[in-house]
Structures are given as C-alpha cells and as structure tokens.
Image (cartoon, rainbow over all chains, first blue to last red; front, side):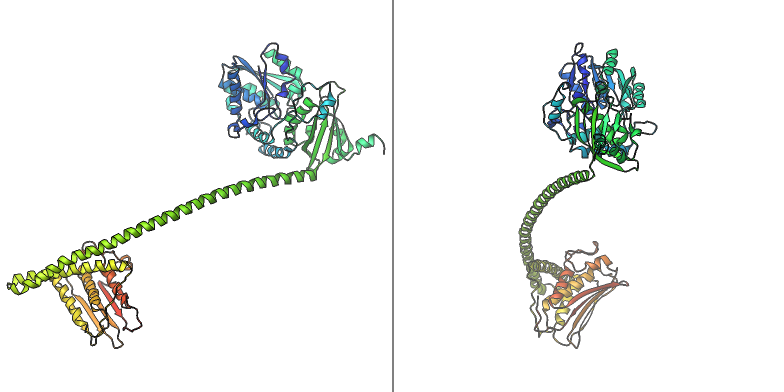
Amino acid sequence: MIFAHGYGCDQQMWRLVAPAFEDRFNVVTFDHVGAGGSDLSFYNRQRYSSIDAYADDIVDIGRELDFNDAIIVGHSVSAMIGALASIKAPEMFSSVVMVGPSPRYINDGSYIGGFEREDIDELLASLAENHIAWSNAMAPTIMGNSDRPELASELADSFCRMDPEIARTFARVTFTSDNRADLPKVTAQVLVLQCRDDIIASENVGRYVADAIPHAQFVMLDATGHCPNLSAPQAVISAIKGFV
Amino acid sequence: MDYPDDLFERAPCGYVVLNSQGMMARVNQTLAEWIGQEKEELLGKRMTVLLTVAGNVFYETNFEPTLRLQGFCEEIAFDLKTKSGKRLPVTVSARGRLGGDETGVTLVTVFRSVKRRQLERDLLQARQAAENAKEALANTNASLRTNIRRAVGKKREAQRVLLAEQETGELREQFVAVLGHDLRNPLASISAAGRVLAPEVTSERGKRVLQLMAGSVSRMSGLIDNVLDFARGRLGGGIHLMRDPTSPIAPVIEQVIEELRSSAPGRDILSTLLIPHPVNADHARLGQLVSNLLGNAISHGDAKHPIFIDARLADDGTFTLSVTNKGKEISPDRMERLFEPFVRGDTQNDKGLGLGLHIASQIAKAHGGTLSATSQNGETRFTFIMPPFSSDDNDG
C-alpha cells in the first residue's frame, strides 16, 4: 500500500492514516521529488513539467519494491498521479484510493473545476511572495510531538518543506493540468473520498471523477476542507478499510 | 485601559481564535475594522472566507496541514479581502494544533505588512533583475566572443584569398604577356614572307591572295596588340604615350583605313580627313584607336551601308574623330558597359575578345581626351575628342 502526498506538503500528511494499515499491508510512504526530504538534485524542470513524470516515479518505486496488486492512496493531485500510474502499470496497481481528486482545476465551458485562469495566475504570483516564508530550515524531522508542545515551538519549521522554486513549478504543473481524458482509461478499482466545503476539489468535481472512471465508488466523508487525512483521519481510515 | 479585554480587542494587530474544527471562535475589534465587517459576522466560519483564492489554496494545502502537524506556522504572507474591495497585505502566525478535543484552541495573529510586502517585492524584483542582467551579460559575452572569432576568421580568410589572387594574377599576366609575344613572332614571319613574295607574284589571283593574307595578318596583329595592351594596362603601367609633335597624322589614319579595307573587302569605308596641322599625339596609338573603332563598325554595322570616318583639327587645337555606321542600335544595357573590358556585342557578329573598345577608351584617356558613343535611329557613332596637348599634361 503506497501513500502519495499532494501539493503543498510531504509524506507527513499521511502520518495519522498510514500506520493504521501496517498490520495488514506493506506500507510505503515517500516524498515526491522536490518535497520533504527528497534529493533536490533529481529535480529537473523539463522532466517534471507534467504530472506524468510523477506517475513514472511511482511506477519506478513499484518496480524497485516488486509491487503486485498494490494499492495507491493518493491525496489531491496525487490522486491523478496514482490514476496515471495505474494506467501505466495495471498489473502493479490494482486499486487506487483518491482523496480529494480533481482532473482539472480551471473551469472549462460547462466543466466547473473551481478556478478561473486569473485565479491560478494570482496563485503563482503569490507563491513568489511566500517564498521568503518558505525558505528551508534544515531541522531534523519531528515525529509524534503531541505530548511535548513546548518542544515544537523551539524548533524551526520542519514540516511541509518545499523548495520555493520547485513549489512554484509544481503548482503551475498541478493547477494547469487536465487529465479528464485519462479517467475512462483507468482499469483499477477506484474509491473517491470527498469532503464538504473543499474549495480545491469540490463535490461536483469528485462526482465527475467517480462517474468518468469505470468501476469507481464515491464516498462523502464527514469532514470539511481539503485535507481529511489530517483533519479527519479516522473517517479516512474507515472509508479505506471498507474498500480494501 | 481594561485588561485583558482591551489588550485583546484593541491590540495593534488582529487576533483570531480558532476552535478545534478550525472555525473562527473569536475575532478582535482591530481585525474586524481592518476588513470592514462586524465581529459577529465572522464567527463560526473558517479563515478561508477572509482570504483570496490564492490564499485559500495555500491555506488548505500548506498552512492548515502545517499547524496540524507541527503545532505552529509562522510569518505567512496572505492578502485579506476587505469590504471596500481593496486587498490588505498581512503576515500571519499561528500556534495550536487544531483537531484534538473541543478545549484545544489555536491562536492566530495578523499583522499588517503593507510596507514590508512592498520591500519584499522590491527585493525579489531586484534579485530577478540582477539575475536577468547576469544572464544577459553572459549572452552578450558569448555572442561577442563568437563575433570576434568570426571576424578574425573572415579577416584571415580574406588575407588568404587576397594572397592567392595576387599570385594567380601575377601568373596570369605573365602568361598573357608571353602568349602575346609568342603569337606575334610567327605573325611577323608571315608578314615578312608576304612582302618577300610580293615582287614575284604577277597573277591577279596571286596578288589578291597576298592582299587577303596581309589583311588577316593585320587583323590578328590588332587583336594581339589589344591583348598585350590589356595585360600591360592591368600591371599598372597604363598606356605610355610616345608623342610625335611634328609628323602629320593623316597618313597614319589613311594607312589604317587601307588595312581595314583589305581585311573586309566588299565593305565601303568613306573618309573625310581635315587635319591642316600636326597633331601632338602618339600616332601609333591613335592608329590603334582608329583601327579598333573601324573594326567594331565593320563587325556590327549593317554591311549594306557604308562606314564613315571623319577626322578634323579645329582652330583651337581640339582634335575630333568620329566613326559612324548604320545598323541595329546598341541596347541601353550594353551602352552602359560599352567600354568595359571583355564585354562583347551580339554573339553572331562579334568574333573579337571584347577588348577593342576598352583599349580605345584607355588610349583616349591617356591623351587627356574622351571617347563617347551614341546609338539611335539606326545609326551608331563613336566620337573621340582630344583637347590640344599642353606640356603640363601627364601622359599615360
């Protein structure tokens, strides 16, 4: 079972969900190239100019670890990345769980992605400004700090680390992507998990994805926002357990 | 001052208290004023209602996850939406984990950062400009290097070509000169042989044959002269004149006319020579000029009509010589290049080298005179005008 994090953070996104499956599955979590503790020297703007490259990376991991009938759990843009990986290597990935998926974020005629082109332009421009807030502090990763809150405040930011330049490129790649045409090609079993009030991937988009993929199930979670894996981890765990 | 309420409500920054669901549970007066709304309108809502679309993407994908994971998130730049429509740039820091039980709260401070944002923008722009300039400089340097390399290469190439051409040119001139001499000698023998035979030949046919031979020799000699002249002219020596101030020139011209009559029997060449005094010129060269002009008229003129040659010496000492023939006019294109070397006329009639007119114009120039041509109404005329010689003139 391989967990893929979405835009904006790193594999820490799954730390409240992934451990729940370790008894039954070999659980793999990883950072996409450019996020978390990944080796930035492998980032190449040409290669990663489409989410296809990220799907290739997952297939590489699957090949390296000898996956067979594996499950991809993808959050946000990694839901699409997971779908593409399953199309590339169907024998490797037999199921895909999509948390807050969207095949296209920019509105297109009758398709409501949720964003206008100008919104995305503004997003990319503002990322340049938050660049200063995003500068990497090379602090060691902290795990399980909930009982020592005072410790956390003394250490530099170490979560959701992203190289600012890569963040801008990944944002552009993500928010200008269009994978609607790939949905019907997915042969894996698919579960779509949807939250209420998710401005990034709203309910109509989630339903669109579930309708376009053959054999896809749709589950509405009792959660709001875009990151139920952090804000409502139990709901996510239950939904996935009901599926696998 | 009423602690702690006033401290909270009227602080010079905005305060937000988020409950465990991430909804705004309390908002201070300062923030409400900044965004132009009543505090009550904001309670129970997520902070995303205050933010722009871009801000919301960041809030959902990074700000809130970071809070949930590490319990704090600091110095994040957002733009707040205000009632007036204007955006308010702020810096936000938060402490708290969200989630957990209902007692857990997250505290958020909001600082206005109009000036700070402007400074950051300026810095980013300056850095971008510096990077652009660096890249532009690198490009300029690269293209400069390429241009210099190219220019040096071209110069070397040009020098190589010049050297090669000089060598070829010298060899060519030598070749032409030697060829001219080698052609002249046998011709001189034929000419001499003809003169030797002349007294012994008595039949009419024999005399005619000798006449034809003489004509041919004369024509060939003219051709060779032109080639040699051309070769010598190109060597930079130009045409040197040997002026004769005392002998009459009319006999020279008449002899040339006779030679050409022999070389083209059946053609009428009519002459008018009015030269009462000697003409200070290189007689041999003028003869060559006349020969070339007449030869040209014979080649290109209409054979059914006579060729006229007219030479006069005016009272002021100006010498004017013209050769006129009837026939097809010279085209304007050809007129432009008439006196250039190697330019030949109509291929049917022109068996020459294309040097005759060029040499003639060089001879004219060497004498300080001009050679011009007109060609209209079925008549072509070449006119040579030479001013009287003065001892200040430079010849050749």
